[in-house]
Structure formats: C-alpha cells, structure tokens
Length: 234
Image (spheres, helix red, strand yellow):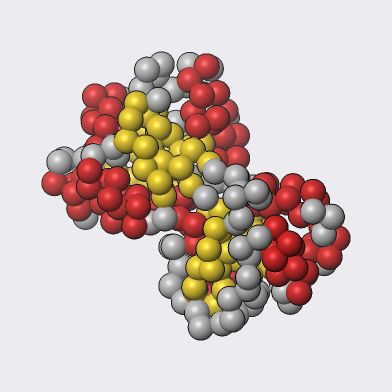
C-alpha cells in the first residue's frame, strides 16, 4: 500500500482516472507512487484558487494555461497529454441509437426516454450548449439527469437510457455499451494537460511523473481508455 507521506499528490480530471488505474503498477516500479483526487476541471479550479495544492495537476489545457499564468503551475512544466471526445453510451445489450449524423443525433435525443450528462464537466457544458443550439433543450431537459460524477453508472443501472460524457469517462463503467462519439459537426475535443504545482515539495519527482505520462506505456493506456495521446511538450 502506498504510504501517503511519500505519495505524490495529483489533482486530476476524471477523464484520466482509467489511465492512472492502468499504469499505477508501472509508475510504482519507477518509484512514482501517487495519491489522486479526481474531479471535473471546473470543480478543481475553485479549490485550487482557494489554496488547495499538490504536486501535479492534470486538467483541461485551458485550466493549466490559466494556472501557469497565475504562477500556480511552474512555467515550462506543462505537457499536453491527450485529446478526449464526447460519446454516448447505453446499458449493455440495449438498442443503440443512430447518432452518425446531426439529424440522427437530434432525433435520438428527442425519442430517448431519459438522458444523463454532467453538470460541471467539459462534456456536460458542451452538451448543454449543443441542445440549445439544436433547439431541443426544453425537450431534453425535461427528462435529463444532471449531476457531477460518472454518468455512465446511471445507464448501467438502467436508470437512464442514454449517458453523455467523455469517452474515457464512459470507459470507467462496466455494464454499458459505448455507442460512439458525437458527429464531427457536433463534437468538441478536449485537450488534457499536466503541470507541476509551484508549491510542490517534490518538484523533481512531480516532473518525472508528468514525463512518465508521455511514455509509450502511458500512451498505449490512453488509447485503450478512449483518448488520443499527444506525447509531446505543450
């Protein structure tokens, strides 16, 4: 078991949870034990603004950029890790709606009995804007479950028909089938980036952890977890 006294504190977007779970043994063999806190970037940012800190932050690229500008993240420590697409999931074995075109996606949202999406995550914010743009927000919101967390769990339990979230977050859930990503015309790719906290007591080890997230093993895990790895310094 990791000794919390020596583990690197990581504040991370939920979209990387599956990756960290998969590569934890690899990182441990390199002496990079970590204690993660997972939440949407829009929930972590106020906590960091309030003084919460750690060793490594993994957030949207905009979040890391803002924290770097404010001196919270060490300038030059940023590394862009992966792009993430938004997808749709249903309970395992359930009928999969056609979402291949804009019109098909719109119709699927209208005929679904219920839809779940995140309140504060990048995927949920985009979905809320999207249904407004498509003119279906009143119809969708009447049957929507909106909360912060892994919304695919509601689909797995049969509590909602459709779950909308980052594909990497849908992959955290057993008991669902991922229908696919939103059509290109409706898609919004999110870049996840990492950086070292300026107040980290172990900046060298934190930098090694960020570098390890661009290793071939980490990038392979990202692909398996539904992410498109970048593997280069931002």
